[in-house]
Length: 350
Image 1: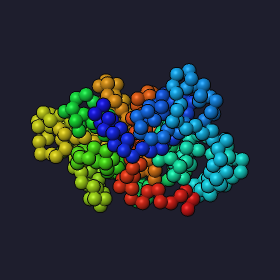
Image 2: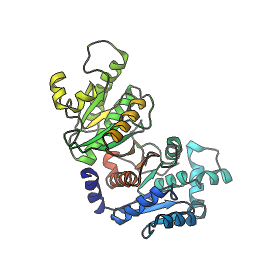
Image 3: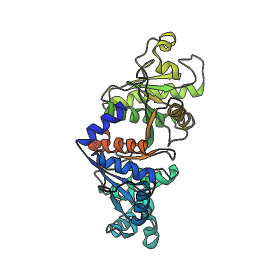
Image 4: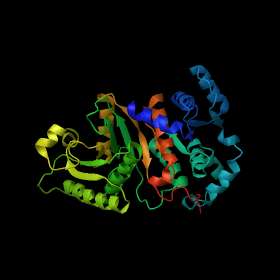
């Protein structure tokens, strides 16, 4: 809880507005109430007001401080529909079709985010990833000077010898199935930048593989080595001070004693705080294994590369997980332009 407690403390000095499109979901209601109780900001639940109040009553959760907006009754609906019709990415969707789309909670929430009516969005407890990402990609768009949207998981373990006093960033665990060379480098730099922003330390980024500095020729290993070099180049161009190394096996990346045996001459081996997986299969599997086998607190998936802060939480997330993700998203909003210069300056369609 050290990491997330620090996030809460920082956010209490700069409270933010977070929209939760799945307003009727019990776990979301509990998380929203805690968000307000901890003085982290204003939680906004989307959905039918009566249904949300009934769910809260069954949970015995007071809704004081929690805003509820029903998209179909919102005063902003006409404005949102007109804005949606202007989007180049959805050209030709107008009238009743546009209304049908915009009143869907994830689309309405994404529009609130794009129009700066909220500071961040958290969804996914009852939705598949594509249902969360599609509205964000259509409405919020990719951040300036960014080509890859990905995600990362933040895991907080009891063992403080691992990562950064027990905190590890893992990517990509939720968006890009088979990243190419450019995408793999972008994922590494984006995750390192977030780690630097949240932890305030130099990111030590390990590109994971089935081997550690194997001299044998293998196209999979070759891609990782090339991605390391490209990530270093991209980081320099963005002014990000970080260490990158790979290919590294997971134990070599994390355990000092093993790193001392296998690969001593590295700034990353044995002390990595950011782990980059070669593909989505390994990333998703690896992060979930750590979460459940090590009983780690997991916060994600934090989306990287969007113009505004957002997250797609796992359908297996509990209220504590959702609260933590909301806090991370909200904290990003404080200085989001430090992560993505120029972010949020243009409205969709302009």
